[in-house]
Each structure stands twice: as structure tokens, then as C-alpha cells.
Image 1 (cartoon, one colour):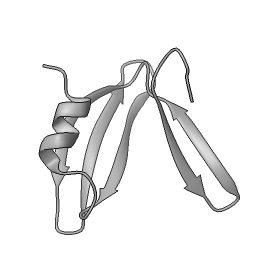
Image 2: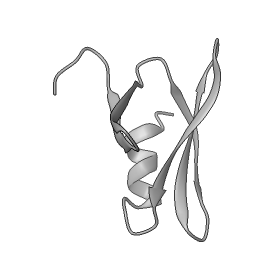
Image 3: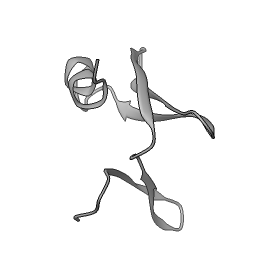
Image 4: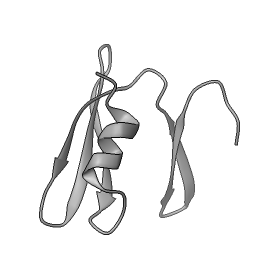
Length: 69
């Protein structure tokens, strides 16, 4: 799918949802026992996060994809 800004597509109970990531900025990637979490922040609307299963993308690859410092 091509759009002007990146999107996150996910499945939910009644179908598929998507969130525009263009104005969200990743602040951290956190690893716990069961998942990896990407913390996101939108200055005017607060915080959000995306969870990835532990057998999904590595912490390093998530940092490379989301954190631009």
C-alpha cells in the first residue's frame, strides 16, 4: 500500500485497523519477558505504543526502523 506517510496495519476483533505514523515520533524500544514495545509520542495528542511478539523483529532492528537519532 502506498501513502504519503507510514502506517501501522493491525488486526482487531471486527476486521483490520490502521494508524498513521507520520506525526508520531518513537522515543524508545523496550524489551520485556514476553514482548518488545516501541514507545511513540505525538506532542499534541499524547503517547501510544506498538507491541511486537518476542519471536518477531529484534530490538536492534526495531530501533533501526523507528528511532532516528
